[in-house]
Length: 271
Image (cartoon, rainbow, N blue to C red; front, side, top):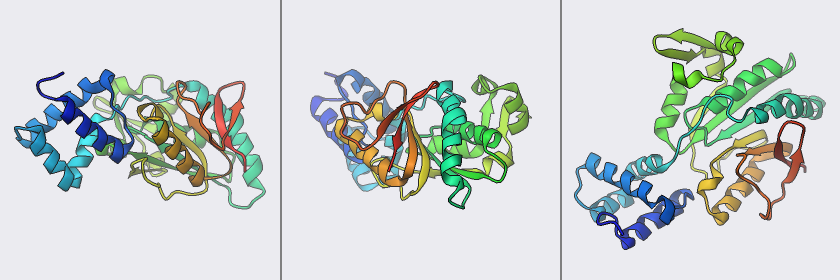
């Protein structure tokens, strides 16, 4: 047991974070919570966890800052290339075939847990390349981390962060800047960044594709099931859900069907 974070304090904070975000802390990642709490106490010039708990129960902005600090924001452009191959070769052709007869030729994507924006910008670049003429799209990008959303909105990435972006995409969709690359405005305007906590209803509806990769692993089964149900409500009939390669809906009672393609596996809301 830590001298700083007692078992009683750990339970108190663990329950609050779970209730507010669905993020689960256990003995294995307790040290992460402890280090983040130490940072926040230093920042707020407080000398006890009791005083800090009193603060976050009445200051919602500080609570959001704490939730921001305990999330893991590992991401990169074209992460898990197989998913994007499946979008290009299977999902977009299927959606164009199904939606094309209905009139409005517009696809709606949601990058849930978008971190610093690499995923939604990857989706936008790909759609610019593969959607047929006469089609449009929008990408909503959301996260619980305000810091990450600010990076995504700015759209500037250091040289090391654009590793893996094909040269033709780099030339077409980025401007070279000192120390890195900036997303061009024409692409930036197609991605809308918005704060969202997956514990709540997003208000989004009729989405064609939802990406929520490597987020559910931080939730326990009940929070995972609730998030998946909210995705179902937000999605249009015959739409697609992508989760992380280490995540699965197997064993979870959901209404999604499993789709296995030559490129990747994902899920479909068939009705």
